[in-house]
Image (tube, rainbow, N blue to C red; front, side, top):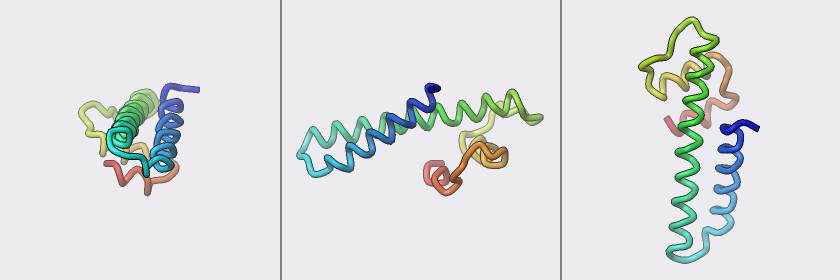
Length: 91
């Protein structure tokens, strides 16, 4: 399992745990929410870096200087992203 796959799995686990525990009070809920956000940020960063690396290796167009939104668009064009609707929410 790659670091990206691990990050996605941890993010999914965190979101599920947060949704189940959303009725908890105060600082525990805030700490859980902050952890979910941190996992999302890590996963998001790994995803655009993975797309950039793929494009550097396999694409004629070099992605240097591209924004993460541009990299995700190129990832969609290269069919690296299975569900484009989900990626639009975060870019």
